Length: 323
Image (cartoon, rainbow, N blue to C red):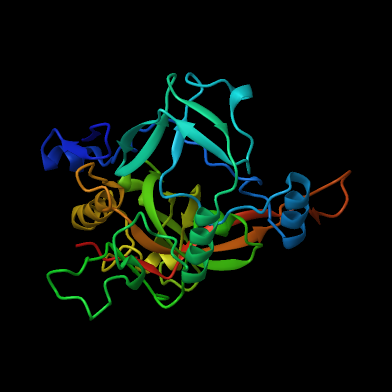
């Protein structure tokens, strides 16, 4: 069993055999995190919807977020005392901590905030980050190249946990993903902070397949919870895109194949392990596509008609190569 030590690292308190028997990699033990977003995840954020919101609130939604998030907890500050989104403020007497490899400002009962004026140097830096597509300053250097930058020596090169089929595509933040109308495709620098099912054994599922000689086919079906400096997002990993995600491991019944299970378990462990002593490690590049699902509904026994579309997200073009 892998137990979280509170700072993001894992403590192998039992033998590897014990971990293999339980089959579970426990979610990171973390405080409830709420990332501000103007829309629900399932809402398709059209250009018209975004423009209407920005006109109502009177500010442009920031896309890149902050490399130094400030955590305000409900027992340190009342909800009615929170600053409104889009407001410039300055914070005094902040504390700080490291959670899951990320340094964060901590607003305590001794902290305070006050209104502030726009800072021209901050705005210029933000425009420069937008121009350079610098959206991963909290991640390891050269993560955008996915370890393919030959100008770096072998000893200096950061070996990636994942590679994508679209390494030439600029990185975007999860907030930009949420603010882009579906369908859309993105490449992001993120951390994996959770997965479902909880038990790695259950990643493999069997489904009907008319093209298969047996009439059935095994595939990897799971959900990964991703996080960066701007938001958190649950994304599906399903066939056929999941066939190559666990690099070199074909989909099968993981309850029956101990070898395949062990390899998938180790790759998953690498993805969700964030060591407090290495705050910039554990970041990966991943490709995410959004799409719309139209649920069918029946009214008064009449023909089925499409309901309101729901936006969903899925991983594509990504392989967990590990170290």
